[in-house]
Length: 324
Image (cartoon, rainbow, N blue to C red; front, side, top):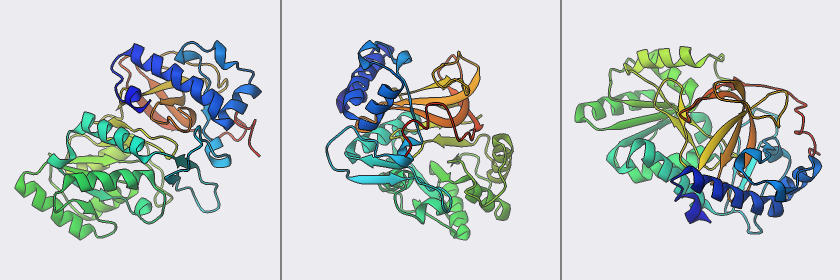
């Protein structure tokens, strides 16, 4: 089924593969199967993706969400805060994840071998089980540029690497957690207009939360770039959406988002309306491809979407049906 997922070119390809994966997971993913039973959905009546129910993302914290009998090759876990329950994604085939992020990255940014990739991801690098670090490790390895790599807290080394890459005219991507990028530009003045700066979101409790526009304005000023890129991914997904600026994200062909009503989780909203983000990630072949997140967003006619924040609601209808 991998070949079908990563060969999707048309809407019909997506719909056909989507229904095929839904039927498989409705039978073989025990958590999803029970959830569908509790909300009284007969999988045999589902004939189009718009009718597929989405599994609340919290189940990745309380259950083993898998649709395969194979043992996991890796278990990705969310960072979380001290004392919080981590989400866990049991990945039985890392080759699927690798194919997903490699194809998506090349689709939006080109061949990693043609650029230097620098990473400022201290809060991710210092723990085990990060799917982001797994991806960035691979991209850095593919880059092969001697200056590619992680910089953690050694901002002076990062500054000098950026200066050297600018002088050499090397196409360069700097990917960083938001608070670390802000820390860096507060102490180093970088004038590198061609630099691609990609923030992965989050203050991780290190700084006060800020709206995207304020974060991007500070980073644009600090790096002297016109736009800030963003990556939208999470532990529970094996695909990423990317923004080349302005906070507008686009998905690879095997990933779609829909916006649901925050008061009625089974009601999908029309375009240009704000609600909670549902994600179809067909790379989640061996777990669950249909996930109701706790992110707020808005989808547009061209398929792009914005992430507008998160909502915290402990008793989302449908979410607590299986939580033990």
